[in-house]
Image 1 (cartoon, one colour):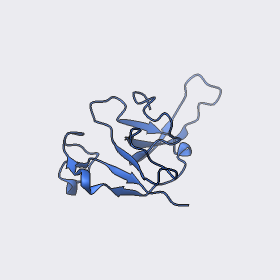
Image 2 (image 1 turned 45 degrees about the horizontal axis):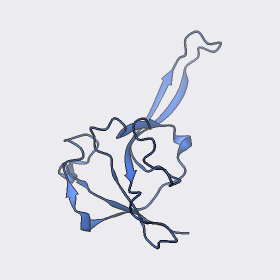
Image 3 (image 1 turned 180 degrees about the vertical axis):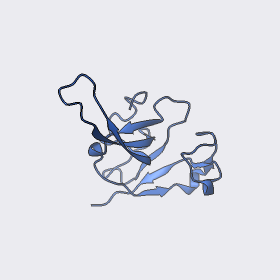
Length: 127
């Protein structure tokens, strides 16, 4: 999560879109056990949390998140699947529109997205 530390202060979760799942075998040379070990990784595109928007149960407002611009070195990263708490339900914030400014043409998007991202999403809350 290098590069985006502090952007989520005051909020208990990080949000990201899983782009791919990798299973790799590695050998740690010089260790007592040099047998290949499987390591699982998630390739993640991180969201930034809008801390200026009052949200949560008390505010009766959904949290706003948006993708971190690709030129920020913390926009993408790898994550151990064991650190994932759970999946979330995102609602497109249609009123904010979409943009091609956050990410240049990339394999992080599906072809049907026409190289555009939604500017903002709402994080659905439920009990």
